[in-house]
Amino acid sequence: MIVEDNQPLRELAVRYLKELGYQVSEASDSARALSLLQAGAPVDLLFTDVSMPGLDGYALAAAAKKLRPALKVLLTSGFTNLAAAGGDEPRVLDLLSKPYRKEELALRVRTLLHEA
Image (tube, rainbow, N blue to C red):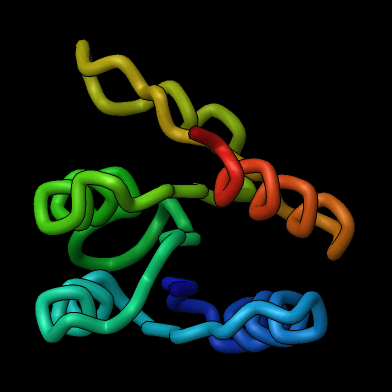
């Protein structure tokens, strides 16, 4: 599932992953993403922007992992300093910096999905 509030970026990520053979669902915000997860949408990996209105990517990842503890998460951001944001809580989630190439996204997604 791709969660990105910037429509052109979301469409690009969807296109990349579909071209790589993945089935992709998408949401323009965290509320919609959580609604899809609660409704039982089949999701193996959550690929979400860090900076979004409402719940940011970190909060979305935490809420999604409460619903589905085995869910893999890949964050993306154009602001690399955001990877360390969030107070005292350590950040153990993967971050892919924007802009990214299709090959970089493919490698990160494949690696995350095949981790034990």
